[in-house]
Amino acid sequence: MRYLELREKLIAMFEANGIDEFADIDWIMVEILDVTRSMLPFYGDINGEKEHKIMEAAKKRVNHVPVAYIFGKTNFYGYDLKVNENVLIPRLDTEVLVEKLIEDIKSRNEKVSVLDIGTGSGAIIITIQKETNAKCFAVDISSAALKVATENAKTNRAEVEFVKSDLFEKISDLKVDFIVSNPPYIETEVVKTLDKEVVSNEPNLALDGGEDGLDFYRRIIKDAKHHLNKNGKLYFEIGYNQGESVSALMKDDFEMIEVIKDYGGNDRVVRGVLKG
Image (tube, rainbow, N blue to C red; front, side, top):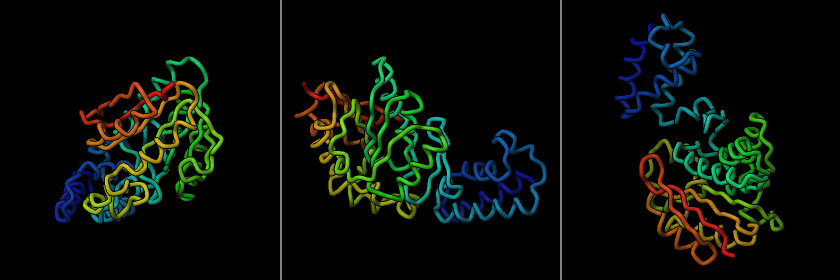
């Protein structure tokens, strides 16, 4: 069977199951056929074994498994990362957080230290370490997530010290120049209404931010001042509607607070400098 014929067959399967992300069909083929997307129309006949693998992957996708989980990997900021059901799939929006932090670190023209809270797959801290050569630390409460993050750091040759810890609990003496976190920030009731791809596959532990979505911001902000050096900065990823509320939580201990928008024009990052 040729590419276009198989693609039409898969589109019909997707439509019958209410899946309209047809680009995922091409990504499945790219992975299994080991070609670039632009080369798919010129591939020629797809043999039976590869057609079977494509169909099996497509069946998982119509059962609401994201492509990244089907193949156990994704790419973030140019770095290949392992992902599984124990970690969130890194989103493009998070690259804005990383981009701004990298710019800030490089502007200092000196070796700095960074702590990533709730590291998950390690996407943020691995990218920071590779792009800036900062001294990097990361914590997560999940042993399974830390296993993924450690493997990703090794694969990408990133030097990161990982610690199993409920926020700052096991790193009471650590002080750094930057703290960054993409914490769970979705309201408990809203989590239940998310797409099946998210609810059925991604870890609830990394999604649920409490009744108002702000539980982890409160906890991190409360202790961050004890773990930042002079002029230290705190960076958060936030939900599109949380810029004002997170900024308000930070105002007692932080100044020069900024809300930064993502590529879609939504509030996505809040950062502030430790007061004096």
